[in-house]
Image (cartoon, rainbow, N blue to C red; front, side, top):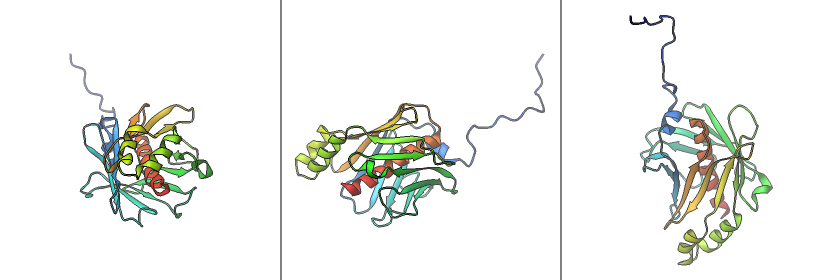
Length: 224
């Protein structure tokens, strides 16, 4: 005899709320991701695609505007706003950049670690709700960035640096376990980075870290 359905049982619903565009955008993407930007572009723009070439994030900002407000879209058409990055400070070595979704809900934030970032890039990533550091972004091989920066602008040599030097940036949690790693890749006339994931994270944690990498790349470009 077939068992009857319990009328008091809660209905089965999707694990992702209908309004959670962040989770929907990150769900099902194929890792590793690629973060790329045009070196000679007059506007600040960056694209994140997954292993299948699907656009995950896209931003395009005016040169003097990206400092205080970066808009993140779902694709290059810029028809759907996914998230925003804002700061109340003019760029300095200790500014905090806050990430929110299109409805204003907090996703997280990233901040440069002051004087520690002079020699090697050092950023701290925060999940929403507190000021406890959840992840630390550190440059693993700063000598590679030095040579890449010094030789990158020299004709012919600049092309070769992408094949010789590969700066790496690890995102580690409080225990020191690496959750993601971004590595610079060889490319002509553009900056290209591969982002690999090594830990189980929520979609919002993934987006928080990927946007932290995106903001770090923009800020480090200003420093050369």
